[in-house]
Length: 284
Image (cartoon, rainbow, N blue to C red; front, side):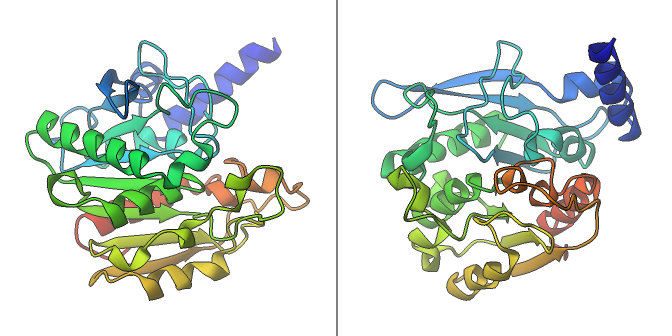
């Protein structure tokens, strides 16, 4: 009975987005595409089309946070990180007229750490460039924007600062970016943040979104202005979301999870609509 209640609640939430249950569930998955990446590895992403009746305006390459290992199944549905804000927002982006590509970790980073320290490796940027190039070809030359959240923002900033030509994204969005690493952590890679990357090399449009009530120690919204100060983008905007349920009393770990202000819980539609406006050339 408890499982049934959870399913009914999930379907009700999806219907609230304006999609019938079956269509909403399908929109959260997509065609699983697998590419050859660094060395002899392979990387997969789930390609989702815009909502029915809409022509794609651009493709959004979505980079989840945490360890980045979504464990995509054969239908392109994530079996892990399902609470991540970008995973939850898939049907919202598609309803705005965007195709989506939800990227999984490469085959040699499927352990507990997942992408871990690989997020700042040159090979990771090269892999992202291969995916971006594939998305351009698959979509008939549509613009490709990279959106990364939390630790996924490190990957997104890495792609934006390192890649050039057809492999480079047309724009980048960072949500709740990790700006404060932990140099005393048990693993060296937890010290990494977006500030370890050559942000000065970012020239494409940039949108950075934080939440005023984000209590995650790794992503204080007060640090996001430093990102914009370093990038060379002519078009850039900093947004600080407020309101929402808040969820006071979260533990240090819970405050960094998706269903919290860090993941814009219950404000997903607002954030997705603002991102869509920025990509179309307007203000958030």
